[in-house]
Amino acid sequence: MSAPIKIVMLGEGRVGKTCLTLRYCQDQFNESQESSVNATYFDKAVDLGGGKDIKLAIWDTAGQEIFHALTTVYYRDAYGAVLVYDVTYKESFMKVEKWVEELRQFGTKDISIVVAGNKCDMKNQMQIDKNEVEEYCKKIGAKHFFTSAKAGVGITELFRSLGESINSINLGISIKVQAQESKGKKKKGLQIKDVKDTKKSNSKNDVCC
Image 1 (spheres, rainbow, N blue to C red):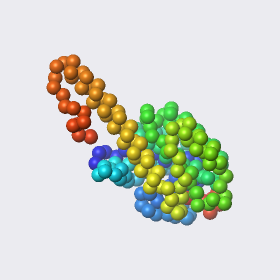
Image 2 (tube, rainbow, N blue to C red):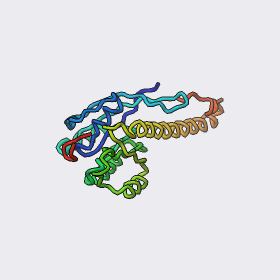
Image 3 (cartoon, rainbow, N blue to C red):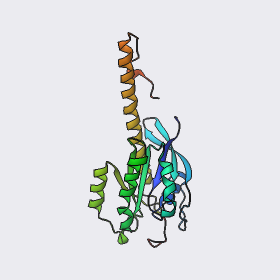
């Protein structure tokens, strides 16, 4: 397995970033989980199928405005981002655009993004328009998942999709670089190896889950 790939969890305070991370990495859920006041790091291997897996280094960041200035520090060298909003609190979805803009400005080029509509188990309190959400995610080139840290819904699928996206982008870059190197070597009359034979290197304001 190669070195861990950095992932950042982003979103407003109390949308459930920590609960999602803990559910995925440790299969734990705390109904009274407090909001993060600093960034916490977790490791987790993702099975991509076909005997291939990648290791994610997941950074759970603080979403409160008073910590916002520090969050952009964690964008550096991140190849994936999970943008989390609370489906029972529409304003948290409206703020997703802010996180996307910051990722474009401070994040890694070609960073993979997925959007998580968390607390989907609270269907009777849902405030978002599904069509609006899907249209926005399509616009920014991100897949959308409805998740519930409490019920354990949609989380594995979300991270697997993110892992596949990162792997696909990195593979494409690797092949492009190899092709460029091969072209250069051919000009120098050197024998090269074919690319295909190259080894693949409880209320909406109080509950945070």
